[in-house]
Structures are given as C-alpha cells and as structure tokens.
Length: 296
Ligand code: SF4
Image (cartoon, rainbow, N blue to C red; front, side, top):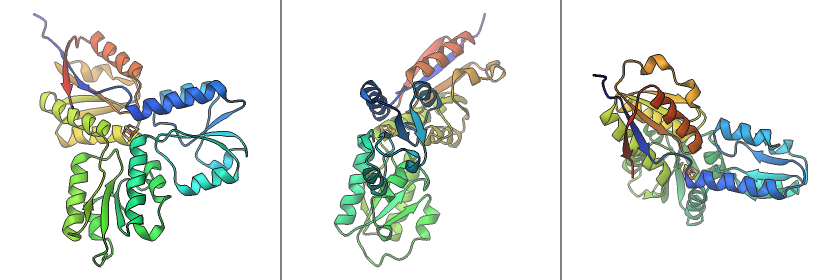
C-alpha cells in the first residue's frame, strides 16, 4: 500500500495586513497618477510583486535624488526617516505614504521616548529600511541600534539615563527576549517597549510548531525579506532542515522524493497566489493529506 504523504501548512500565510495595505495604496495611486509612479526602496520585499509593478510602469529607486522634482512618489511599508520626508518636500514630490501602521507605531514609540528624555535602544538590522527610518527620526545621540546581546555589552554607560527598549517589527521573538534581557541586566531601569508585530509573531510560532512535526520545511519568501529569513533561522534553530524559495518553481523534486512529511510556511510579503501554487506543486509530488498548523 502506498504510504500517505502529509503536508503541514503553517497558518497564517499570504500577505500580512501591512503589505496588503501597501499593495492597495499603490493600486489607488496607479489609477489616478499622470506620469511615472516612483517607489522608494521596494514597496515590500517580494520579487513577484516588484516585477509585476515594474511591468505596469512603476519605477523603484534606492535614492530619492533619482526621482525628478514634482513626481509622484510612494514610501513603502518599511517607512522612512524625517530626513527623507524633508528632501521629498524640497523636491516638491507628491508623496503617498504606505508605511505599515505597525511600523508607524514603532516610530512613534521611539519619538515619544526621546521627547520624554529617554535614550532608545533599538534591536534590529542596522541597514534595514525600517531601522533606517526610525534612526532617521531621532537625533543621533539619543538612539543606540544593537543587533545582538554582545552589542548590548558594548554600549556606553548610560549613567542612569532613562532608556527604552524597542525592536524592529520582524525580528526573532526569542532573540528580542534575549536582547531585552541583556539590556535590563546592564541597565536595570530600562523600560520595555514594542517588539515584533503580530504577523511576525504568529508566523514564527507556526514554524516552531511545524518543526515539532516535520524535519523539512519549505519557506516561501525573498532572501531580502527580514521576516522570511527569520522563519528559516527559526526552523534551523528547532532542528529542521529548510529551504527559502521565491516560488514553487524552485522546489527541487529530489529533496521531496523520499519524504513522507513536509512543512510549508511563507513570509508576510508573499502573495497567496504563490503559496497556493506551492501547495499544488507539493500535491503533485504526492503530499495530499493536509494538516493546518496555527501560530495564532
Ligand atoms: S510584517 Fe508586520 S510590520 Fe511588516 S508590514 Fe506586515 S504587519 Fe506591518
């Protein structure tokens, strides 16, 4: 008798509310804009969406100086700093802001902390647009970006100055806990602030649960997507082999051949269409019995 092959599907999947909002925003702008629509950085970190928008005439740039004065420009889901907003005003750009409300919440928490006389200790990836956007809203001497507990040890002595712990929204929730603990050990008066967003937290929880059930997990997402890469790191930390793929077309059949169970998850910027295609491809490889694994 042929052995059953099971596909464990992480819930939630498809784009998060912040990415959906950014996509809806660019669609609205495309309906009304005369001339080229520009997007600073990527709208979200997903090649499929970037290519689709490029095909429809949207132009992406890493540098606001590339955008001709007076043009239509969107800020993507990761947000920007005051410096970029100021330059946009000077260039008389017609701005639409698609920053995710949860990134806005982080930016506000950072600005409020500094207004209250606190220093901000920000856990995140220093070159990620979200972190650059927060740093670009605060005077340099008020914020300390860190990417590990070791970097917390290397911070200068804050001499009892009030400080606030914040995190980029897409960091590993376990690492946020470790970094915040290191901060509190070093600066016992440090106050807790915002951590990972719910979309990140739920996806990470689901991958931890998947790793209890399978030893091989396929994760759909871009290597440039912070939340997708965290899912792969979490799978590895839980002892599961994993692959980070842009789409089902990259699924290597030889890796599926002798398996009887596979997990499937996706980053928060992966459209549902790509997820469904991957499920279909796994079904074609015999993984017909599906089990939902919820991270909620
Ligand atoms: S991952 Fe979180 S912060 Fe980023 S766009 Fe989605 S909901 Fe917003």
